[in-house]
Length: 145
Image 1 (cartoon, one colour):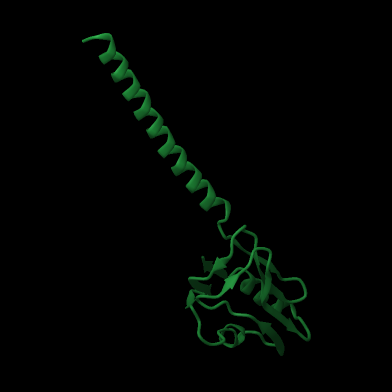
Image 2 (image 1 turned 180 degrees about the vertical axis):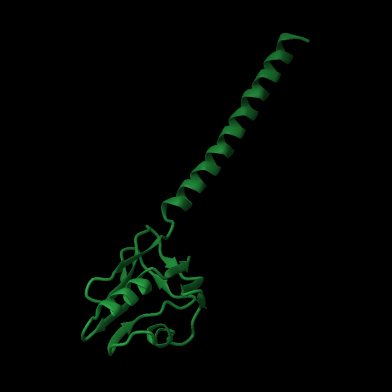
């Protein structure tokens, strides 16, 4: 093997190594870019003087809802097409009123947007109602993006 052959093989090795590193860097950059605009939905639950559930988009990219699941007392409400709350609230003994916003499949939330998913208020909160509302507050809320 002559010197020119060794130089050619060394050059080929360096070129192939540079190609592997460039492809790897491209993969890492693409992965980083996807993660940097990942949507993230956060639920805030408060049960002081009623029940308030707010949805906030805290990610850097828009969140598109793929599925909505509410699990309460072992009952699963998946992608509800109608208002599921009267059935949930039927256990409350006092009169109540509520406002709600139900995320639907395909709806989107821009970064920084906030929606009140549920606002429940009763006229007179008894101790029993406060316990019932606390059980509502621990219902599982999930919106897949």
